[in-house]
Image (cartoon, rainbow, N blue to C red):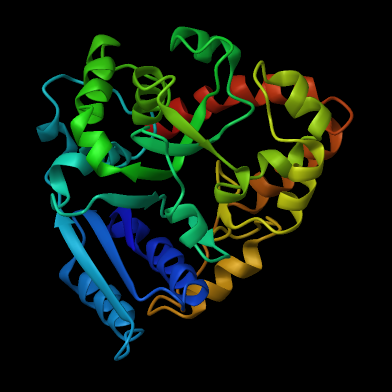
Length: 327
């Protein structure tokens, strides 16, 4: 099983926690190789992560890490682009086809802010039916943003978990299509490569169950709102109820992140458990977030009776927060 991460030195503890969650819940897999697209990751952190993963190997089960060094992201693109508060490392996903060894036919990309809670083989072995990749729907994407990407009445996908058929990706020149779309949009997209993937590959992405990319959207909004807000089919109420109870992959979207002091995310304990298994187990939480999380809880309480208003406010607030972060 080949798993891909993109990371830099500041996000190595989260990457290690995610790797630990994969290792803990996939003991039946014979081989697991973590491919790490690394932007300025120190030799010390590389050695620590490699030793940690190697320590999980046995005579019959191999666990390994392969680092892929990245230059500054600007050197991979022949046009200027704006990141508006996002980390430029996210763009490395677009380079999977050209930077990964040609003998690898399939890879599972995971954002470093995910934890895995289940066996990944059912996901990894999913038939993509000729599509270059599979992904999970992000149900509350702003309709105006979708329309600008040519996605009216079509699903918008979150790129935090991507099952990539590298043979189809390369054969269909999917990477080139995404970069061309990004260039034609002037390098100015709200969610950078995620928007570019959605716009360029519309109709060519296999929809995966939300269990493989579960985020707090499903906790904050009732099924009725998700169904009303989306202009395309969503999973049934019964399926969403089952997934809510026991999702396979947790994606810590937005600012609600368990490595920050004051976070009350319902899966924060599991993140801390997996971090405790790594060489970064003594990593202290990021301070300075307590007031933010207090305001977050008050906002969620006040908005609970008004879900449509809440999603409208959030879709307007995110661009503001990203611009503030970029400054």
